[in-house]
Image (tube, rainbow, N blue to C red; front, side, top):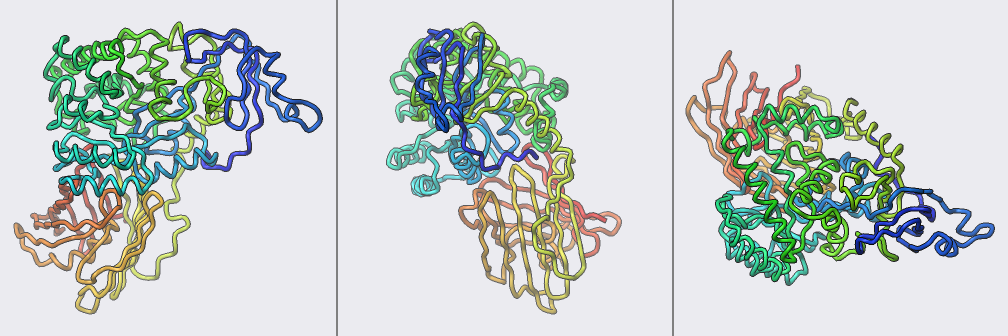
Length: 619
């Protein structure tokens, strides 16, 4: 993989000369001007002769270290922002840069996003500036696996306080939050200084969300009723006016719905040139026949979705005309929504909605800076140097922003040739064999076992273990997006009773070691765990069940979660034992089928929301 995580050398002063400057402060273009960048900031904007005076000269002076970029005949504009993304893979940093996206707002945060954001800010990672909410906060039962379920007002206050301590500056609320819990979340965020972003929960409704002054609403949630019932222009115009009065922002993500398509269309989209840059595991989830949101949809529903996009375009124009602020965002990471490329599709959607190119670009440059409370989005002295050099005037056609000749993010400059080379390296990295256990300690001697982890048929992890009469030691490594390293050791006596158990896991820079009550099996080391656990239900007859309280890390690793584990013996084949395993966890109920060959677990298959994860014994 391309070495994105690097200590970048101190950037020289950079002078853009002979450029037409699109400041985005207004529609005026400054013809044949110069822009000086110093220490990652815009230091001067003006006619070339005036700006060159500020460079300084003489031996050893600033002019000796100056990088001059002749932009004759080209346009210099602020970098673009995609204000609704799901960034799970490090390779996507390159995809955003290559298409001129210099700021992204991630709407499903984990600790790794806070770490990545710091690395970009400190110049240790090449990529767009990363803003992030915390994890999805939802009611019970949560819609998405790995959400943080918030059931009570007390839990709401505790959750917000914890997220503030961890460093998040905003939360994301989701569809099944109850009204009183929503109110408690909003109040706690106001106290902690966090923004409230996300969906409009079903039971809350748009009027209550506007009264609460929710900071940003994603996908135009709530305006049309639930689900998408009403297209009433008069009512929608009234709601647009109330939105402006509340000061609530909207991030419509229009283009994501244009990618809710039948399987045949999805297969065609996967042949698009940019798809070779999408991480393989992400691409493996883009299967309409597997995605829980799409697999049961028919032609009438797809027609309804297309009609709804038309309604949303109308609402975007009414919101704009009412003075309600807008943000360009794409929901990148969803099926066929490719990081970087998607922002240009969303710009086109804004224009289709009736906004001018300038009004559209405001929502992708200056407005995101204002929403974030940060100094980016215009070409003004003192602003962060996020810039695009393009061939043609973007105020005539937003399509001119595609594939810029050069990109500057936080004062670092990449030419088109460099960006294309970085993309080529990203695509090549996907074809290299992974050495997942590199750097881990060697396993002790004993009976060796190994398994592969597959997601929709793609290998996305590995597990290995050694077993003796007195202990089991196992290691499991999962790839992104839920990158993790799990190490487990179980000790047992001659009768197979557990005398000691412990697990260490490393997820998204979170590494902890715990000792557990030896009467329980805890943690997660994949199939190896079931070698030990099976001693408790091996006696079951077909149709019988065994239940126990089980403990594992919660979805966001903030705590250990205890939940019911139910195992039911099924009728096996070819002498193999087979069991149905149900885990009633806080975020979701997970059901799996588990097979054994002798006393060794040979296969574990779990149906998830966007496909199937399967762990298989290697022979």
